[in-house]
Amino acid sequence: MVNHTDTSVVTIERFIIEQERLIPHATGELSGIMYDLALASKMIANKVRLAGLVDILGEEGSDNVQGEAQQKLDVIANTIIVKALDHGGRLCAMASEEEAEIIPIPPQFRRGKYLLLFDPLDGSSNIDVNVPVGTIFSVLEKVTDGEDGTLEDMLQKGAAQVAAGYVIYGASTMLVYTTGQGVHGFTLDPSIGEFLLSHPNMRIPEHGRYLSVNESYEQLWSDDVRALIRRYRGLDGKREAMNVRYVGSLVADFHRNLLGGGIFAYPANAKSPNGKLRLLYECNPLAFIVEAAGGAATNGRGRILDVQPTELHQRSPYFVGSRADVAIATEMLAT
Ligand code: AHM
Ligand code: MG
Image (tube, rainbow, N blue to C red):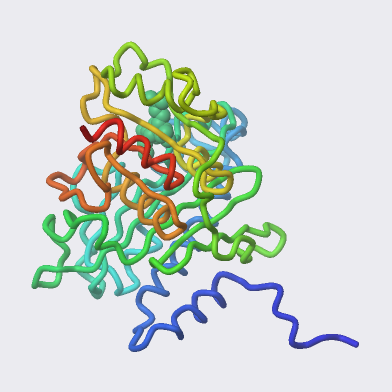
């Protein structure tokens, strides 16, 4: 007999609706942002999939077969997100790693109470060699009066995020997000164009086997960072060696470690005193996700989500992953 109550296939739309019902007085605005982001990421996935065909379809700066000027994929991804989100009436401003200034909502559209901050295509330098890339996003609620989102609204601590997520364009496309209660992963089924719930309630192991760090900066690290990485690698004899895995594409490294446990580190170094990664577009959203999954994130002095941002594009040293592994960084660097 056909079982009509079978609930094994859950689309992201259905999941978002069911999550919204759990929140008293929810207006549906946040759900709307999530739908729009899911749509944008399907469009980006489609473009990323064609990346290797650039020589056939036309070089950057030239016209492709449709007569459209070719653009770099990170610029295309940026435009897709802005266009998918600017007219829904739910946002009062956006900010992107790709744009120097706050992106205002065009005057003809309604404003909402939320702000969206995003890195449209992180790790985009990896595209040429067919390595996974990703989109990272963070949602904040407006704190100032007035209709438009301001710099002050953007510069809130990461702990104030109301939602955060990432999309990984890998062997399959996955969208992982949290509103602070549980981290949920959806895999795109390209045959039907839907994100289906594949990883409900993701939890990062308490400690793990993966260490992700670019060791080519070793000569530039401070002594305490060098000692920390030696500790993770088991070279000081104080713990078992972790397995080094570094893709060089943050979303891919983070995603593997979220599933398998371990730590991703991008410490400060003599040439980059604040590391490389951006607090608002990369560190905060992934810290919000990892904490909701039971993990932790620090800049080496304290919890990432407690840092008061002072600039839109500020960078931060970053250690993120399993709680027990991040605790070692806190212990060895915070002194
Ligand atoms: P991007 O935002 O310019 O793409 O740079 C961020 C990327 C991350 O995906 C990755 O973790 C890091 O840069 C790798 O940097 P490095 O090559 O210095 O190890
Ligand atoms: Mg980036």
